[in-house]
Amino acid sequence: MLKISIVPVTEFQQNCCIVFDDQTKAAVIVDPGGDLEKIVAAVEQEAVTVEAIWLTHGHLDHAGAAEAAKAHFKTEIIGPHKADKLLLDNIVIAASGYGLKGFANASPDRWLDEGETVSIGEHEFEVRHCPGHAPGHVVFINHANKLILMGDVLFEGSIGRTDLPGGDHQQLLDSIANKLMTLGDDYQFICGHSAPSTIGKERKGNPFLK
Image (tube, rainbow, N blue to C red; front, side, top):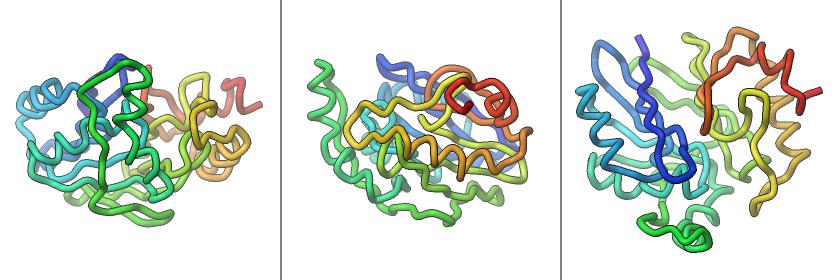
């Protein structure tokens, strides 16, 4: 059974997720944006073994502690799509614009493309490239559990912001329509900030999708 421990990190309260198999305790960390000590504490509390770090996209609050987590857990960084290389190469500069320190640029060991799969033990996740919030944004979909690790594409009652470098409002709407609204209403998602939701709830009531 898949379980998720959500650890809010950074001043942006980003939902870093520790996703793991409850029996084997194999785990991945999704979007370690910062506050590595909080992530390490959660990993130790769940008594899991981190096998990889997955990134949905290259913004500092999602990837700012990826290299630190890689070094600590002695594992690799997987994702996002290579279109986010410029963002990942400039995390420190982006952080300085907010007056923030303690972040590092990130260099993934493996880029991801549309249609690839990544796994936690026997739990397979389909990768879908969903640009708009960020050029290389990907989402991870586990069809067996009808679970989406969303990042900042779609939120409860909202969508990702598109006023940051590389953002494109129409592209984001197209990504949501073509890559997410094709899924069933009962697919639940964990987004990058705030509360989880379902595809059905957003299809019915999200004002940005009307």
